[in-house]
Image (cartoon, rainbow over all chains, first blue to last red):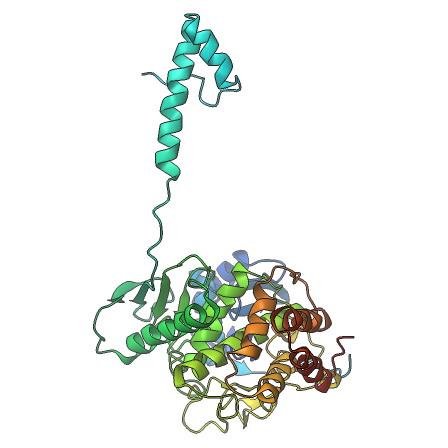
Length: 100
Length: 339
C-alpha cells in the first residue's frame, strides 16, 4: 500500500509532503487498517478548518481525502504523524507564477 | 399542571384576556400557561452578564491532541512553575491590554469574552491556532520550531484571528485570506510593540522571533519590514514572502498562499507606521482597527478594496489629510493603487 500525506497551512504556512510504502514494513497490517479508517473518515474536498490550522491531504493507493485540525479522527492523527515522521520526504512544488 | 398543546399560542394575548374574563376556561388555562412560559423564558434567557474584566484560563493538554485539558492557571493566580503556562497567560494579557487600552475593545469579541488557552497540545506539535473560541499551543518539535508560547506577537496574531472572526470575518483563502493573515500579523506585532513600549522606528517588525529552534538559519517566521528575509535554511527553505504585488504568488497550497502573500499588506502597514512615526499602535494601528471593525469591509475584500477602506478610515478619523495621503503612498509603494 502506498500512502502519501501533504500537510499545508499552519502559522508558518509551510508545506510538508511525505510518502510511505508499507511493502517492507513489519507493521503493515496495522498501517493498512489505519489508512483504511483514515480514508473512511476523510472528506472528498478540502475543508476550511480553522485559521492557521494544519490542512492534510491523504492519498492511499490513488484515492485522496482531506481533513483539517483540530477535527482529525484518531486514525487520521496517527496516520499523518506516522507518515510525516517515518515516510520519505518528498519535494514540494509551489505553483509559482509571478505577477498579478 | 400537565403540559398541554398551548405552548406557543398563536392567539394574541389581548384576545385571550378577553376570553378569560368571559370565563372561557381554555383561554384562562392558556393565559396561565402563557404567563408561566414567559416567566420561564425570561429566566432561561437572562444571560449571566460577562465579568467586565480580563478573565484568563490556561489549561494543559498534557501532550494529548485534545483541547481544552486540565486548568493550570486561573485569572489572578500566581505564576506556575511551567514557563509555557506563564508565557501563555502573559501573552493573553498583553493582547487584551492593547485592544482594551488603545482601541477600547472589551476582549476579542468586544463583549468581555474570557480568554482561554490550551498549552502542551499534542506531541512535538509544530503549530499554534485559534480554534474559533480559544487558543491552542503546541510545544514545537525542537528541530524547526520551539514552544509556540515563546513569541508574544504570535499570541497576539492568533487572538486577532478571533477579532477578525467577530468583525470583518475575512474569508480564509486567496487575497481576503492573505488580508486575514496580515491583520493578525499587524496586531500581533502591535501587541509586542505596545508591551515593550517600542516606537515604530525601534520595533523589529518580526513575527515569531524566538520561535525558530537552535541552529535554524533565520530570525523569525516573517518580517514585515523586509518580507522574504526572515529565514533561509536548508530544512526550512527560504522565506517565500513577497513585499510587492508584482511578486504575488499564485499557488493552490496554503489556501492560496495566505501566509505568503500577506507579506504585501504587511509591508504596506510597516511603511505607513514608519512614515507617520511615533508609536505604530496610535495612528497606523487605529486606521487598521477602524478598517477591520468599521462594518464596511466585505468578507471577500481583495487587496485593493482593503487599501481603499484604509484610506477612507484615515479620512474619517483624522482631519489632517496628510495622514490619508501617507496611507495612499504606503499602498502605492507595494504596488496597490487606491485611486
